[in-house]
Amino acid sequence: MKKNLPIFQSTIIASSIAFAVSTSAVASGFHTQNGGTTGGQGGQVVQASTGKQIHEALCNRNTSETPIIIQVSGTINHGNTEKVSGDSCNTAEDKIELKDIANVTLIGVGGGATFDQLGIHIRNSQNIIIRNVHVKNVKKSGSPTSNGGDAIGIEKDVRNVWVDHVTLEASGGESDGYDGLFDVKDNSKYITLSYSILRNSDRGGLVGSSESQVNNGPITYHHNIFDNLNSRVPLVRGATAHIYNNYYDGVRSSGINSRAGAEVKVENNYFENSKDPLGTFYTTTDGYWQVAGNTFGSGVTWSDSDSDYEPAGPNVQSTASISIPYSYSLDGASCIRDILESTAGANKNLCLLYTSP
Image 1 (tube, one colour):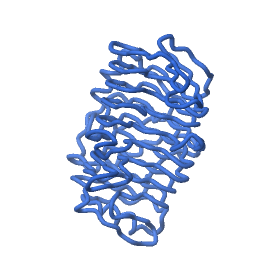
Image 2 (cartoon, rainbow, N blue to C red; image 1 turned 135 degrees about the horizontal axis):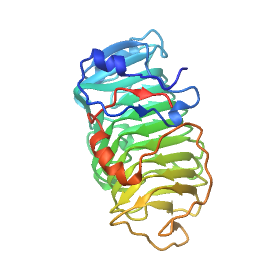
Image 3 (cartoon, helix red, strand yellow; image 1 turned 180 degrees about the vertical axis):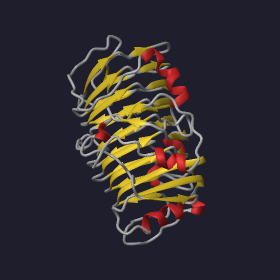
Image 4 (cartoon, one colour; image 1 turned 60 degrees about the horizontal axis):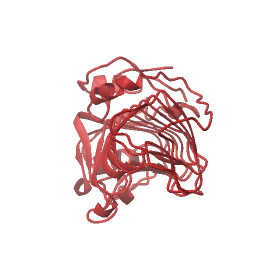
C-alpha cells in the first residue's frame, strides 16, 4: 500500500465542507508502518445518516476488501442502527461493527457526525481510518448498552488503524455504566490516535486487557487532549507506545501507566492539575519509559512509591532507550495547550493536507 497520502482532500472538497486550514500536518505515527494506512482511498464515496446506512454501505461492496469512503452526518443512535447482512460485511445491531473487513474510511461531514450511546467496534480488520466523529456516553451497563462500554474498541488481530480528529467522552465512570474511551486489545497493531479529545471518564484507554496480553502495539498517541479522566491515559501493557505533544488536564488518580514490560516514549507533553502523570501503577510487573521535553506544570503532584505503585517523579528520568521508526516533528510543550485548543477534536480545524514525512 502507498502511505501518507492526502487521503481526504478530494473527498472533503467535493462535499463542500468548510474547515479552516492550519499549517499542513505530518501524518506521523505507527499507522504509517506495515505498508501504511490509506483507508478507503480510491473507493466509492457513500453518504450515511443512520447506523443502518453505514452497515448497508459495507454490505453492498463487491467484497469485504473493496475500498469505500463512508461520509457520515447527523446523529447515529440505537434507534436508527440495525444489523445488515451480506457477503462483504459482518455487522451488529447494537454498535457500528467494522468486523472482518479492510480498506474503509469512516468520516464525519457537514454539520458533524455524533454517535450517541453507540460505540464503534473494529475486529479482525485492517486498513481502517476513522476521522471527524463524536462518540459519547457508550455504556456497558444500564440502558442502552453498546460495545462493552467502549467509545472505540479495537480488538482481535487488527492491523493499521488511524483515528484522527475525534471526540470521545463519557459522563462518569464504571459505576455509572461506562468503560474505556479508546481500548486496544488482543493482537492489534500499527495504530495511531491523533488530534483527538478524550474526556469526562474514569478510563481513558488501554493497550492490552491483562498482564499476560502483551501482543499489542506499536501505537502512537500524538496531539490529543486528555481532560478530566481518572486514569489510563493510556494504560500500556507490554507494547511499544509513542506518546508525544499531548495535553493533560485533570488526571485524578494516575497518568501514563507503563506495565508488564511496556516501553513508552514520552516527549513534549504538557501536564497540569494531574496526579502521578507517569509511572508503573497497580502492578508489580514494571514497564519502562524514555522521557524528553515534557512540562509538569501547576497542580501536578507525585505520590510515594510502594510495592505496586511506582511514580516516575518528581525527578523524572528515563529508564529505557526507545527507537521510533518514522519521521515526526515535535511542537514545544509550552505551546501545546494553545495549539490543541484550536485543533483537536471533531469539527475542530480539520487539516486538509497531510504531507509525507
